[in-house]
Image (cartoon, rainbow, N blue to C red):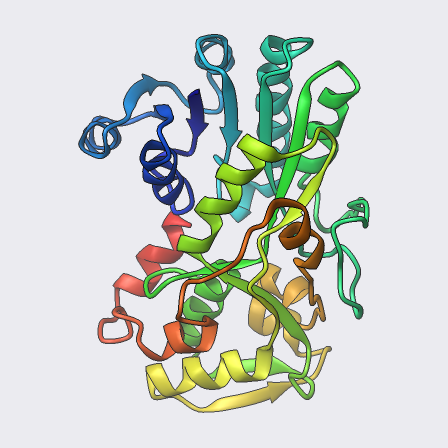
Length: 307
């Protein structure tokens, strides 16, 4: 199949592109830069110029493809609500082209606030939370009602030795404040998966997935946030401290909403339904222990901006 991939040069997309090509698919990758175009060509993909604000470019990319994997998102939390709205319009534009065609649309969502305090499963519908206005999943399933063969891949904290989802921002805060902090006893949990394990799941969802399905890219159901903070403290050689819930907003800023959240998640149903198995060896803590950018003062901050 010829697959249109948004976010093709990003953290997740850059793993998906070779996974699809190695499985015999053609890839048309969305990029807004010449550097991105060069990296796509080097990976064996075709280049489609555009971005999430260029809705016509999204429609053209989808129109010339047998399916779409949508991973792109603008990770600027100073304009988070606006960027969520851009994402919703992008998904709707992809749906305009795919409606009634039986061509698959795989949309990226997250496990974040699905079921705080209990293990979230694939069968739980994503609730709307005012503090978390990202509506990727709701927008996706609205396209299903229009006759689009849509499914959703939910991501936890995706990591390697350069980036780790929200943990990247924890590192940036720790570097800025001079302490690595957690909230309360730090026994709240964040699920995680290695970046290289996400790519086979997207491919399987494309090839074998069911319309209306939700899939979880979970390798570790719940890593203790205290252990994450301790690993960051060791890497940056700074103290590790516990903060009260009342102290958290001043320390973490927008990240305080997540810092104290207990959000474990399971992929048991995904593994059974698609035959996906996470096999990448390093877990979240192992990657944190061996990060390459603990040794500088600048790379961690720039990585946070690129997420």
